[in-house]
Image (tube, rainbow, N blue to C red):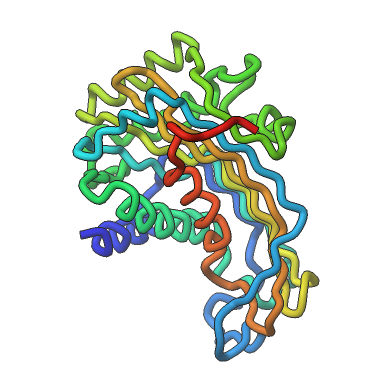
Length: 275
């Protein structure tokens, strides 16, 4: 089932407009149609993680009472930026949609491990979202990102999390009424309990990093209990990944993030000490 969902997600991202904003640097020439002689021919990509920043937050009540039998609506990233140099010879498969699809692969695998009974429904037109709701979904990402949250800043503003670099904490936040009402309306409309929403995904390729190029990764990933209007957990993650081998990072950009997301989903908040 999950493999089928990911295949449908991939097709949907290629052929229909999703709710999120997609910004990609233009690709040059016919690079996407020619064989890659720059990516390496064998072996796995080996990356060195540098310059890492992170923040993790759990609502102890909401997280501890997660209903594994509930339905979670899985949103594509609301705002994706994919940047690469025009002359990057190993960036042929790199795009905003490819990044989002790769992130979905990681999310699906980890959620199945953490909450094996939880039903995950893709919040894209033709899946959980009816065709008639396409205009509603097209405007939904902008509505969500414009809502005020921490420090009165928009949800697409990463500065509150950057300023908390290295912090992990349990915290019960009171959501602004407009945000709480919007989450509740989504849950009611589609009969959902939870929402997983990558708010911001920003990745830049750098062919000069390491032995065969690399990239910088920045994400704000969140999970919400829409029924109660609560943030369940959130993580901010930023790092630079440089190749240690001569295999270029032309896929699986979200793989280093997997361990960081797993720590968020697999933490026992009952025995967690803020630090």
